[in-house]
Structures are given as structure tokens and as C-alpha cells.
Length: 323
Image (cartoon, rainbow, N blue to C red; front, side, top):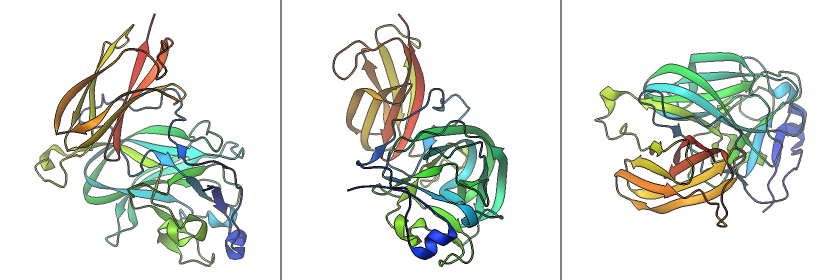
């Protein structure tokens, strides 16, 4: 099935026309990772990445022109559960060549008690995400955060700071994964209900399951006895030695049952090797990479990322190979 990247302004929405068909292939997979953006698990009790998407993106969404307006109309958000600390925020983004110095306001919201973003808990204005990948590639953009969130649902997202102007980028969208709680803030007079709604209310986005918005999160230690708050997130504990020459041991921990996928990617995000994929009980495990690519060749010296995924949640660590 052909997938597209869609953006809409008030005029295009009223006419029901999607714009900018740019992908003639299948799903856009996560591997277009830029060097240095994987968040290492060295910050206190942070577990790694908490995400709602399934590590592949079939489309990307954005609002343009009059659909982006204060206060934060045109924003996108995903929800997570507290209490705890948001240690970092990451976005999967793409563009069509229109990026030209645009910035974004990164926002953490409390829930409004109706299942939508409410009071602002943290505002990081004027964030420059850096160079955004060209569709059909996507790039990961990370920033530090240090915000305590209360018990219950909270929201993380961004607003493109380009009201009345052309969109600089689009947020990647997962249309076939397990799903999250995606939201977009719809401006008035667009032919849709104004305010926070699921993106599925917009016809080109009707298949949206979740957005490329994720966090690095630390569960409140006082709440870890609660089954709902005992983190399901996998943890990459140790890469040894790092840097390495010929072989590296990967030590990881899982807190629930389910298939575990371990993979090695180069600095550009391309898959280099799959280390292990099996069903695991909760506990600590080890795997090994022999420094060879999937086709049996020796991998070059350089920067790599080890990625672990279990039940839609993932963690990553930076790895360096030397000669």
C-alpha cells in the first residue's frame, strides 16, 4: 500500500485534498538515526525509552499556515503514566525540504481529567531540533528534561513555531502498531471540532495509531510496588568492553515476559546485525556481538548503537569499535 506524508492548512482541509505524496514504498522504518542522539541510561534511575509506536512509521503529519496558531493550535502530543521524572524527550521527524530555521515549543502537560492535555507542567520554547531527515527517512531528535510528573496520565509533545508560515517538518506516525493515545490540537473554523482530538478525525490521518513522540523516564521509587507502575521497560545494563576490538558482551534486563529483540545499528541508523531474538522471562541476560555484520563481514571501526526492544518499549546504548 502506498503511504504518504500529509500536511493541511485551513483551505486544504475544507477542500478535502491531501498534499505532498512523497513515499512510493512501504513502511518507513526507524533506522535513520543520526549520530549521538541515542539516550544512554546513565541518568539515575531512568530506564531508557518509553514509546507507544512500534519502531516503524507509515506516514507523517503536520499542520500548516492558518491551522497553526496560538495558543498551541496545531500541536501534537502522546500520553504516558506517572508519577516519576521525565529525563529526556525525543521526536521522530521528517521534512520535504522546507526546513529553514523553524523552531518548536516542547511541552509537558498534565491531563485535563477528560483524557486530553491540560495545564502546562513544563515549557521549553524555541527549540531548534537540528537537521531533519528528508522523507521517506525519519530522524530522531532528543533534548534533556528534568520535570517531575504527578500520578496518572500526562502528555508530551510540541507545537511548531511557524504560525502563518510553511511547516518546517512533520511528526512521524505509526499506522499499524499496538497504538498509543495520539492527540492534535485543531484550530477553529477548519471543518472539524476545535481543540484536542485524535488525529483520526482528519480524513488523511484516519489510520493513526500513535506518533513518533517518546520519553526517557524514571519511575517514582515510592510507587514501584504498584503493578501499574512497575516499569515494563527493558533495560540495557552494560556493554563490555566499550570501546571494544573484536567482541562485546551485552548485558540486559527485562521485567516482563515477551519476545526480546537485540540489534546493532551504525551511526546512520542502518541495521548492522541482529544479536538475539527470543522469548524471555523477567530477569537479567547476556548476549554477545562478534563485531560482524549480518552478511558475515567485519564491521568497520566507528560508532554504533545497540538497541533492545520488548513489547513496543525500547532502550539504546552507544558503542564504539576500535582497531
